[in-house]
Image (tube, helix red, strand yellow):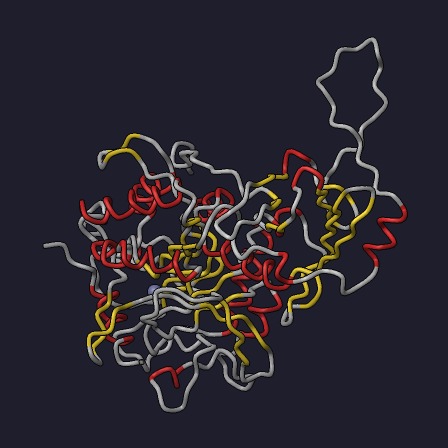
Amino acid sequence: MAKISRSILGTLMFLSLTGCTNFSQPVSVNPNVSVQKEEPAIVVPEAVKQKLAEPGNAQRNDIRKFPYPYEAMLSIASDIDDTTVEEFKQYHRFLNTKETTPYGQGVGLDISDSMFMYMGNDQQVKVDKEGHGMNFVMTYFDGLNPNQIHNAAQIDYFFKAGWIDSLHGYGDFSRKNTHDISFNRSLVEKAWQALNQSGIHPKVLINHGDEANVGNFGGYSPNRVTKYQEGDVPKSPYYNADLTLKNGIHYIWNSIAESEFGHDSPIFEIKLRDGQKVWGFHRYTHELKGSQYNWNWSPRDLHLQLTNQHLDELIKKHQYSILAQHFGGYNLGFPLGEEDIKSLRELASYQEQGKILVARTSRLLDYSAAQQFVDYTVAHEEGKMWINIKSIKDPIFGVEEPSIEQVRGLTFYTDDPENTILLLNLTPIPSSEVQRNKADSSGKKSISIRWFAADYTDYTKNAP
Ligand SMILES: [Zn+2]
């Protein structure tokens, strides 16, 4: 019988107590030189620009909720607890690539992971099949020493490959004695110095662990176990919410478990005790049986999360789901059982059929914010519909002129996709990035900015 390692069990038990684009302008072509067929230049007429400058001419119901043709979106957000580099490589090769593996062909899904900066956990735990201890867990720094790197090279590589997109707290600070705190603010300062220097810019923070993880924030309540959270209290030595938001975190999981599988919006506003606001996001962690929590966020329970009933309901309700997981929390080798593998293949088939788009957590969250807060205008001129995306008006983080990466997937309804032109700040989006769609189940045709291309690269091959 496979066992989840003890530190995760501790966490589970603890939680159970708590309730402008680079559009190349066509150049004059030398007629003597044979070139590939250029797309005709789209010139935006002045009359169109004027119309697009008029505010208030766009209707929110012009925007489809999900990228065409999908009816729902889902992410699997895995916590890096007790995960070694070798375990990480093994299960991501299966999750993200289509390579032949000992467990069958990889499922090729966009599933990203989280990272620890530090290891401050003093528990004696076997974290892998080989019996290694906590010092084998993948962390950026060695223990609590910001002057000594541990797996910085691997974390840097996999972050840039897209297999890591979130911080799991700033590390594992769970303790045998939860009053014996190993966390402090200076660790966060040093963490961001290193991340910024490396060009690692996560937007997602998943607060981790037991009551000794006092730097957590966003879920504080005086009447709940979350009263230990001090990360947003300016006078606390554990205060870090200022550094966290200043360095680019937009979305946090506040450590409050949820049994709801789907949500209309994955994000909700959290007001912190230092006066700042941040987006919280929902994560499905358990089922409720009466008042009892049935945790199903371990890999051998993945099939209990990815049930057909859950997936079909998500589609029916047009919702988002983010599942919590602990893919590397096992210490008996490859984490998934046959049923779990089957459920992942089923999920992949839902995606192939255009029902559920599986996306890494940061992409799902950014998409949702873009879809909800995009500011755009529409003009009808010269027999064409012109749609100009101006900005993302994020009510918490302010107005931003998006890059094409930030608006991928946005889908606008139009009667005549062939005669609709998508602009990003008045610059035509290249046709290679535009997708014209047939009518969906609502009977309406649409036009989209293409979603991220699938990436099945086996990044383990050249990993450091
Ligand atoms: Zn954790």
